[in-house]
Image (cartoon, rainbow, N blue to C red):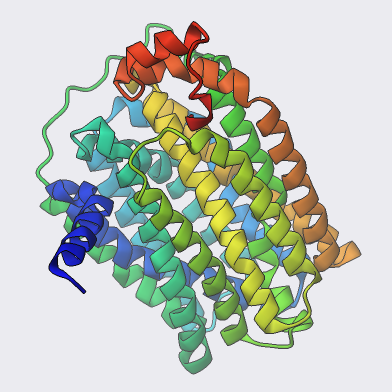
Length: 445
């Protein structure tokens, strides 16, 4: 390869990793990727433990519900809290509590005292922690990134980090389960939190004055955040589509043990392979987002990615061969990741700073909060009609949601243009000419 080609390659790589030039974000990135590998090990271990103890699709759905429903219930109030407090200190607290939860789960499993009720209780405790941790983590990214134009890259790198760990974690988890049992996955997850806690403590974070309390109290702040989110056509539409896909599509992950064990005739290794295949697609989608230079164009990718996710889900549900099932989970991962990270980037770009915590809490409520209801629904339908038919129905609903969002793109673009112009993303001159109808670059948004 010629030197000039090397230089181009290095420049492209540096551009894709540009958010890592910020010290605090580098620390955050390094600590999180270790911790997230442990988190994915716990997810595969929990699913397999429930399946091994009960063999029940319904119980898989119940445990998934217990771990995610607190996010739905508490997220709006957590957003108020996140907007008020020091986000760095709150993250240290939530990560420490999550570590203790994982060690408790490990102790009970390794001692042979774990039961489904105890597993549900500990999953619910983790859900309470995540109700505060997730919106805080999303909002804290903005504080680590000094230049707004690098925010989209940071969010894409976050998604790359999540899915690189999602690629590695389930594969390691499957091996650990087969060799030593689920309890050691939980223990390793607990130990992995030490990396992110150390990274948070090593950050240099400027002290921020606490936000003054709203004169009307917490309920008034909640109403203000709700009115803001529902009054914005882009944010409202993005959250509604995300909620639909999370409700009817994302619970496919809860049913993966059924496909791995009953339909494909495998074990924990097969489950790890299926989860890793989906993670490969999600990582590819995240890297593609990281290579983008601007937020322009992400709007039209949201319905495309939702449709890709739905179509892949239908194909996976109908497959009876392991190689084909794994292959079809790649577009499932690509579609879901581009929708989530693209939606996150747009919302984080256009939201007002003083309402960021509340807006992201509603975003996470749509993403993670509706998933537990979907887990219960998927478990119930799979018990009655079978896992394949359940996923086919979910995929069809995702396709319908994508078509609905695509029809609203014109209204969404008109609402976003002035915000992009104010932020310098869309030059004011181009904005004025376009509104005059003499230039058509609308397809870029």
